[in-house]
Amino acid sequence: MKEKLSFQQNLLIGSLLFGLFFGAGNLIFPVQMGQEAGSNTLTATIGFLITGVGLPIVGIVASALSKSESLFDMARPISSRYASIFTCLLYLTIGPLFAIPRTATVAFEVGIHPFIPDEYLKLGLFVFSIIFFTFTIYFSLKPGRILDWVGKYLTPIFLALLSILLIVTFLKPMGQVNQYAAQGNYEIQPLFTGLLDGYNTMDALASLAFAIIIISNIQKLGVKNSRLIAKETCKSGLVSVAFMTIIYGSLAYMGATSLGSVSRADNGGSILAMVSNHYFGMIGTVLLAAIVGIACSKTAIGLITSCSEMFSEMFPRSISYKKYAIIFTVFSFVIANFGLSNIIQLSIPVLMFLYPLAITLILLSLLTPIINKQSDIYKWTTGLTIIAAFFDLCKALPKPLQENFAVAKLINFAHIYLPGFDYGFGWVVPALCGFLIGVIIWRVSAKKE
Image 1 (cartoon, rainbow, N blue to C red):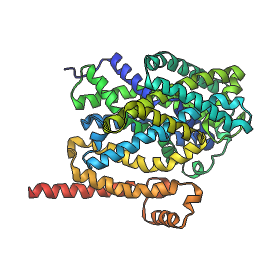
Image 2: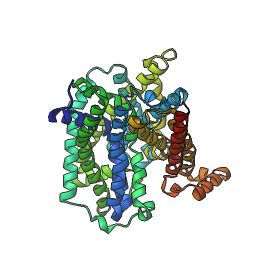
Image 3: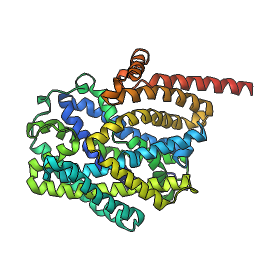
């Protein structure tokens, strides 16, 4: 049994981490953040990197330390029923509810939108999404070698083109970061707003699902001990962290300086397309459209495959893998036609609810060597977190729903009694209280025994 990986093997695992986490959808959020944060871009980017880069790596390390074979196994100390519900919710969120539809809408916004008049956008999205998901379901049912081919050749080409665009952004900036005032929450609380923006990548949620892939690959390379696997994951994660930090930071800079030459837009896909067109004209737009389209297809195929496999394994007697794949694809097609901006808006309340549960699960798993998956600690921490996260969900609802009498009362209650609620972290104190209550119960029970 090996105790550590070689430098080349760490690079290999780091590249795998980067490939799993960085999809085409990850391009749009830092660009949008940069344009809105303006002079506060650096502070907002630091927050974004904490939840968008650091937290996913910690999630995989936590899974290794807890010796979990799956997300279900990781959450089982709370209860088997909770583990099933949470696993389903998480996979649906990173699958057909939001992430898979987002792949189609990102590809459309970046690649097709610039060529279509505004009055035909809905029709254009409808036709494009039919073609996109037909292609996606074909390879999801018969994956063949398409994923390997795309991963080996098209992803590097995609990154090479993006690198050219980012380098030009620094060599010939469209404006200066300090020229443009921060907008909205970025003006008064840029760090906390950046932290919440990192939720949009969904990478911390995905880390709980992808962890088994990373762990199994490290085991195949000869490292078997869970503590050593966690150590090697940290070392390999530095590669992924470095790449993602450079790319996210550069994209945020691009967004912050873009207003010198392009107009504001309601999503990062449109901004990216306008910037590409500004620097390279029609050729840049076409190339970016092709690469992003294929990259999004790869991501969609991978997500449909993993979600369908998970549901067919959890519920083997109900529906087959192929039927799940078809159902998820059709559902994703319907959601995609709401448009990218609407998908992002609809996903925010769900993410505000799920992320606190994911973060507490990650932290509890990190403490496995100390608390040994003690059920009372898991239950009390998660129980109080659920209550607090529900208030965060209410606050993130669209304005018309927030103004509902009952919802407004709940938000006002949380504003008064939950520390950190106004910053999106009202769950922290309840989670800490739940953890302490669980520890006390555990210690008392241990003494009695």
